[in-house]
Amino acid sequence: NVNNDFFKVMELFFKDPNARRTCLQEGLLNKINSMDEGLERIQKSLDQYLETKRMVFPRFYFVSDDDLLEILGQSKDPLAVQKHIKKCFEGVKTLKMNPPAGASRVIEATLMNAPDGEVAPFVENVIIDGPVELWLVQVEKAMRRGIAKLLNLSIQAFKGKKEKWVKDTIGQLIITTGSIVWTTDCTKALVAISSGTKGALKQQKKKQVSYLNNLTAMIRSPLTKIERNKVVALITMEIHNRDVIERMIKANCNSVSDFEWLSQLRFVYIKEFGEFGKCEVRQTNSVLEYSYEYQGNNGRLVVTP
Image (cartoon, rainbow, N blue to C red; front, side, top):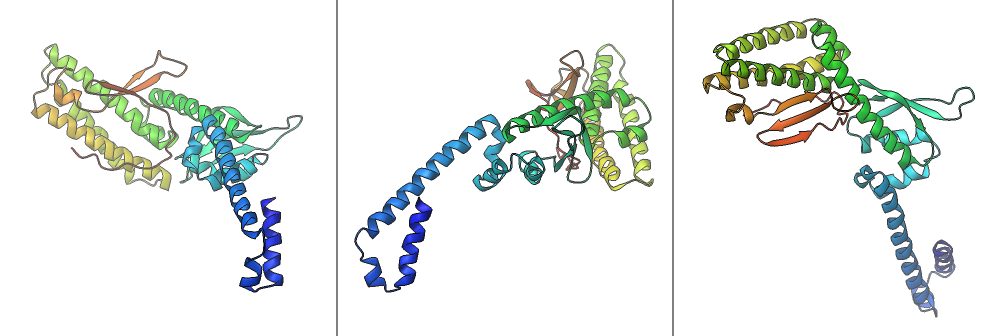
């Protein structure tokens, strides 16, 4: 109605472009005011409608109204929603979607594509069907479950050849696995010192330096761009871990309750918990749960004291 009224008013102005005659017509001001009120009511209803969608899938709070309207308007076409996925998931540029096959009428998402080309598979295919906000909730759950499973596999594979492990594991979980293993090793060394083995931390430092030498040798070998990014990020973290061991040796740390150790970010993996185990990040007396948000292969900044 507002649109039709607006057309009529503009047509009037076009036919008689004399401001005084046209603007002083009876009822014109009321008509324009009622159009304005109508638009305000529409905006209010639209905000309420978008709010219901955002409550179902809270990541929509970070998407502008215009983009959200476009996403909702194309909810029958999941492929058209693809270009907006990055606005909802930091590390996911697109999803790999399999078109409907055979008797099945539904599209299925099989894996996540990161902006730099890295891929992370889901545990099970996600059915892309129905309202967009509902299947995006399923994608979010599948992302967390997929990353949890990949972390579990990464921890198991860590004991083997490191080159293969680096190439087969996604960048984010290489760093997480490295942090879990380092925390476990340092804890064992500190427990050993408490039991009387004085040189345990120095032994751990030697092991850490030898591991860093292997990684530096790997960076000189032919690698793809993604693999090189992974190794660079891993070396950045492992150098930080070496520095922390050095600081603990200087501070004569001899127990897991020493502040120099408690003040570090410690990654602890509890494999008996849940379907694929649980990773916790601890620092002093705070415990945060690792959220399994796929970050993509985004590299790491140097960790400063």
